[in-house]
Structure formats: structure tokens, C-alpha cells
Image (cartoon, rainbow, N blue to C red):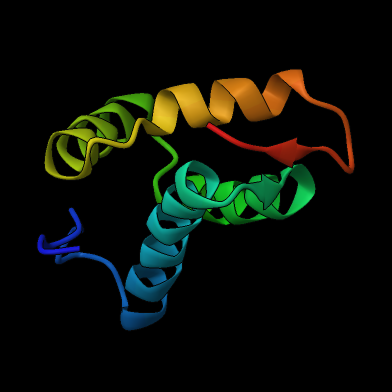
Length: 89
């Protein structure tokens, strides 16, 4: 990808790494698919770093504008699936 991931400069290095891992997981869902539980585990860590809905929405909108991948639609679909299912967009 030829873009910079949306991040906050208030985050620690470990938090930045974990948020980027979440963005990459969303990309994997679109490109190959990813096991639901793995995605939700990565998303839970993302929510520890970004607990507020407004900040999550802002980051998701910026990420979608840059990448074309929707965090909202990805997580919505994952929540509709069962444990062990593959999430594929």
C-alpha cells in the first residue's frame, strides 16, 4: 500500500504496532479472508487503544478514504458470523 496509516502521536510504540496490525487484518479480510476469532481478538486490542466511538469513527473514516477498506463493514460482518468462520469481504 502506498499510504500512511492513520495513527495518533499520543500512542506508545506498542500501541501503534497493534493498531497497524488491526489495519492489516482488515486488509487481509478483503484480500484473502481471516478467521473470525483472530480478527475479533485483534479488534479487541484496537478497542483498548481507541475506546471512544468518535475517535474510532474518525480513524475508520480516514483509513477507508486512504485504503478503500471499510472497518465498519468488516467488523459488522465478523459479528454476524460464528466462532471458527472465515471473514471475507
